[in-house]
Length: 206
Image (cartoon, rainbow, N blue to C red):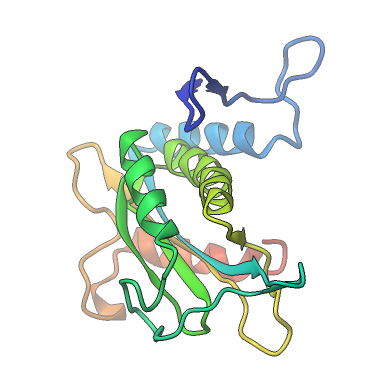
């Protein structure tokens, strides 16, 4: 798949890994996801995924040391100049929208200087491709503003970690939510209960 880049006069190719004979490379995560989507579609369902990414921001001080980004008035779920004096998140949002990324929100998270980037849910493969490309784009745009942005799980030992929240659902052939409506365990469909059981059974492997 060929995508527009945030770099001028540049394209991005997102591809599957194949064996030399053209067969799927079993360890390629993107290929596995595509095969899984086909299996769900054969059962009459389309997987949808929404991803919430968290990242810590750092900057270099006068001595050339990498230190946490100074956010003088940040608190959880804050926006504006007090939580992002350099305005790098505005630049990320603007460029992201130009490239077709759809955001639910960009906001500060619990541990300053931590931020959350929530992409709107989409078809599974596109959502995962977008997540991969968004992280790369966000880091490079942040760097243009003097910010080193990292999605590493725990870059500051004494603070909380960066999460990756995966929200998924299944749509039936009529475009309806096959998981069930909100309202507690009793409102879940048998399909949803099966999904929960599968997640519990395979949680160690995941």
